[in-house]
View 1: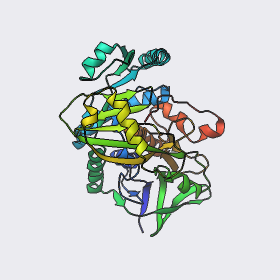
View 2: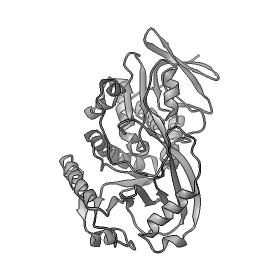
View 3: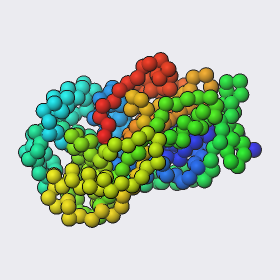
View 4: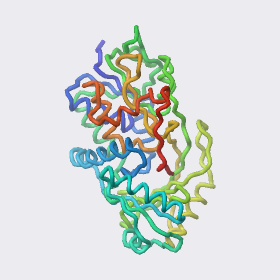
Amino acid sequence: MMKYDVVIIGAGINGVYTALELLDRGVEKIAIIEKNYPGSGGTFRCATGIRASFTSREHVVLMKRSIEKWKELSGRFSFPFVQGGYVWLLSREEHLQSFMEYVRFHHSLGVPTRIVEPDEIRELVPSIKTDSLIAGVHDPIAGKSNPFTALLNVLEYLRKNGVEARYPERVEKILVEEGRVKGVLTEKGVIEADNVLVAAGYGSREILRSCGVDAPINNLPKHALITEKYKEVFKPLLVDWETASYMVQTVSGGFLIGAELEEEYNKPPINRMEFLYTAVKIWSKYFEWFPSTHIIRYWTGYYVMTPDHHPVLGPVKGIEGLYVSTGFSGHGFMIAPAASEAVAEWIVKGRPSIREAENLTLERFKEGKLIHEIAVFG
């Protein structure tokens, strides 16, 4: 029986990209185990957006690095990364005052966001109606990608270079002896490994419990739709901050929209007509043509939330060789290149090069060192 250097549980974007980072660092014996199919959790349901305009130092620093790596990876693996920006739409004075503070914070960390007037919003977003807006915030370095090719192109490369992808195969237990990881037990048998990375979204909670580790993550149902395809209408991803709704024209041409509905944690996601009415109402206010478009598909998914809306990354204290990458709170796709780099560095070198990542370990919840993020929407 082969003993692996690293077993990764979960074939979403973070599991797959961590395998790539490990392979690039000379780790040879890697297995990725997925209970369904690659991308079947949050990756293939996401909004495709990528930004560094957050409200915590940890998020901003990691997301800036992620944007650098999105540029590199998209060229290396032939998938799109379009830096069309984000535009946050503000209709209330108190929101404007808050974002003025956020912009100053962004500038202190090298993110060039800026306040824009309604006239400039119309330049950035042709055909938008700005009657209800007092201002906006433009993030010019933000962008979008295609989650399908971003994951599958990399996974194909990994397979060709010796990484084993096993699916569908469910992990039942993490095997630990005397405080050291020994491998995992799946429905098909024991797999020995020196290191185990749990990157299984909400499923990480149950998997970690199998070795006595509690991760405070919860599933929050979310809703999204996509319309028929159009020629390019505008480049930025739009955020209506009043309603926490977003709209982005994907790289394939359809308009992808999310809007918040009141939901309960850890409940099965259910399609609701209320979402369609809400989404159409919000964005018809901004685009006269929108009521005439055709909705092609509507789906539900989850944000895997932590109490402070930041991911859980890195080693698990007390169990040598056990690592975690989960709880991204709606931002797992965009942060994946930087988060995966940090986790791979932890495994190979014992410490990430971006020190802010060290603030995101599981220990922060026990120690009361939470880092709150405000800029969560959708």
